[in-house]
Length: 344
Image 1 (cartoon, rainbow, N blue to C red):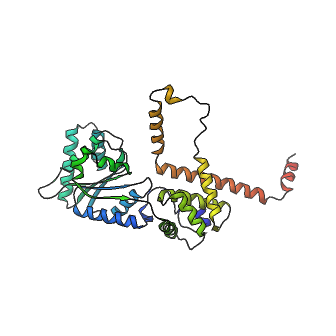
Image 2 (cartoon, rainbow, N blue to C red):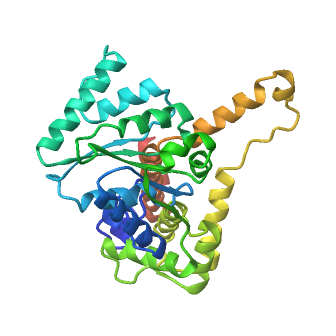
Image 3 (cartoon, rainbow, N blue to C red):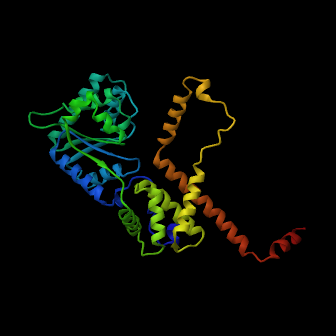
């Protein structure tokens, strides 16, 4: 693995969110301030939107890591393509409560009793909903109704809604007026600029023991930003591949050409198959287009953790092949034929 080659204690550019690597760009610092303000209010909804891979989940996990566990009981839900009743079951389950075979009334009663128990312990309950853009209007209304659980002087449940930019359209639709009235803080997390992207890369490398090698010149940094657009996850994907290439080719310094070579490799890997000569499925089947779109959406929603694991397996395979090739290259020219002669 390239970590050992470059003297790093761990992989600096993993895809899964890790608050250990949190980088406070201008946008992330402002979003954190909104989250802390909203959390201090102890009620209502806090909404954070941003592009895919902008760092919304890492932001919230960083916040939760800074809150003593004896003050906050948090539940995190990622699967949001559910109907309202299934969402309620998911909420109940996320707080560690039994849900199988229970009616909606029983689920609501269990949740209310749990929230009151948390309050009596001097704690607060926080529900974090990821991928909020997938919530339909009825499900959002179900979540709003949960905010009605309260004592005489305070709310028993606070909710964070994290979503892609399209969730803002949902939030501002005419049917969402009651929810908007309960939003304590809202912030849209944009991409980093070129200077922040460079600082982000150096921060993540330094977190795992980087001492300046490998190095990246100005051309390399510009090429990295041109590809990633300042989106943390795209930056991580590219940089992980760049360091792998550096290990395989024994590079200690990267220039623009190196980055562009990796970008071309990534682009080729994700090229769509050639559809020339294939029948028009959308025309042949009335629902063909929507089914293909649905399939694409499911593929895009594949787990980041699974993708990271697949990349690690690929790296191991490449390293294994490289070791074999090095052994072959180190073998004297006549050694192989001599070995065969002896066998004969």
